[in-house]
Length: 63
Image (cartoon, rainbow, N blue to C red; front, side, top):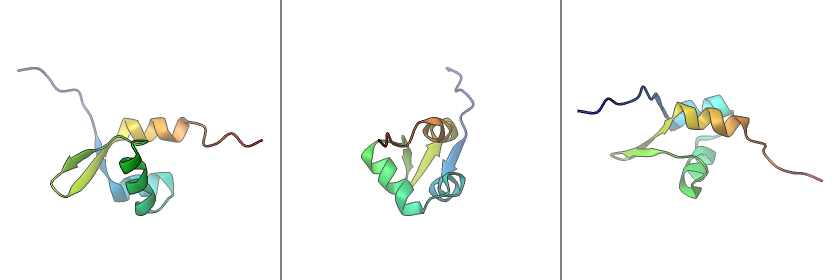
Protein backbone atom coordinates (compact mmCIF):
# COMPACT_ATOMS: atom_id res chain seq x y z
CA UNK A 1 0.00 0.00 0.00
CA UNK A 2 1.33 3.45 -0.91
CA UNK A 3 2.12 5.74 1.98
CA UNK A 4 0.01 8.86 2.31
CA UNK A 5 1.81 12.13 2.93
CA UNK A 6 1.14 13.91 6.20
CA UNK A 7 -1.65 16.26 5.19
CA UNK A 8 -3.50 18.21 7.83
CA UNK A 9 -7.08 19.13 6.97
CA UNK A 10 -8.92 22.09 8.47
CA UNK A 11 -12.63 22.70 8.84
CA UNK A 12 -14.29 25.67 7.18
CA UNK A 13 -14.57 27.36 10.58
CA UNK A 14 -10.84 26.88 11.24
CA UNK A 15 -9.98 28.28 7.80
CA UNK A 16 -12.24 31.28 8.37
CA UNK A 17 -10.53 31.99 11.69
CA UNK A 18 -7.04 31.72 10.18
CA UNK A 19 -7.92 33.93 7.21
CA UNK A 20 -9.98 36.32 9.36
CA UNK A 21 -13.00 36.08 7.07
CA UNK A 22 -16.50 34.68 7.45
CA UNK A 23 -17.34 31.02 6.87
CA UNK A 24 -19.46 32.10 3.88
CA UNK A 25 -16.36 33.65 2.29
CA UNK A 26 -14.51 30.34 2.70
CA UNK A 27 -17.43 28.48 1.09
CA UNK A 28 -17.34 30.97 -1.82
CA UNK A 29 -13.60 30.40 -2.27
CA UNK A 30 -14.11 26.63 -2.22
CA UNK A 31 -17.01 26.70 -4.70
CA UNK A 32 -15.17 29.04 -7.07
CA UNK A 33 -12.14 26.74 -7.07
CA UNK A 34 -9.80 29.36 -5.57
CA UNK A 35 -9.36 27.21 -2.47
CA UNK A 36 -9.10 23.44 -2.96
CA UNK A 37 -11.16 21.29 -0.62
CA UNK A 38 -12.30 17.73 -0.10
CA UNK A 39 -15.89 16.91 0.70
CA UNK A 40 -16.53 14.51 3.58
CA UNK A 41 -20.24 13.77 3.74
CA UNK A 42 -21.94 17.14 4.02
CA UNK A 43 -18.87 19.10 5.14
CA UNK A 44 -15.68 20.32 3.52
CA UNK A 45 -12.09 19.97 4.66
CA UNK A 46 -9.33 22.20 3.32
CA UNK A 47 -5.67 21.15 3.27
CA UNK A 48 -3.64 23.38 5.57
CA UNK A 49 -1.05 23.87 2.82
CA UNK A 50 -3.75 25.34 0.54
CA UNK A 51 -4.63 27.92 3.20
CA UNK A 52 -0.95 28.84 3.62
CA UNK A 53 -0.60 29.24 -0.15
CA UNK A 54 -3.75 31.38 -0.36
CA UNK A 55 -2.53 33.68 2.40
CA UNK A 56 0.78 34.23 0.60
CA UNK A 57 -0.82 35.15 -2.75
CA UNK A 58 -1.32 38.82 -3.55
CA UNK A 59 -4.96 39.78 -3.04
CA UNK A 60 -5.47 42.32 -5.82
CA UNK A 61 -3.58 44.59 -8.13
CA UNK A 62 -4.93 48.02 -7.34
CA UNK A 63 -3.72 50.82 -9.47
